[in-house]
Image (tube, rainbow, N blue to C red):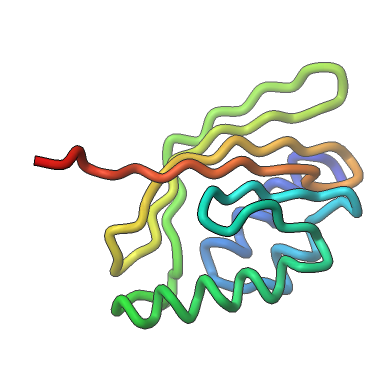
Length: 120
């Protein structure tokens, strides 16, 4: 599978809220950096994702689709596909950006950021 195919599958899993689809796109060395949760490995992803879904459901979100991904920008350098995207968990105020790195072996990393309105 190409890096682009892995990225598409990764996005599909997040959009649908399906951790199994996400995991199927991950390289063994995958690390998700989520500021509140820390670093999440491939082996810990399902548990992490189910925790996120619980939190989202408590906020009134978690429907289908689970997430919307927009503003996708990609570039390929030395066999690594890098993607930047804006994401929003539907039905909640949770949104932010992600920087994703992918090879033909799968998604190797994502760094999340969260958007918050300035305090008044």
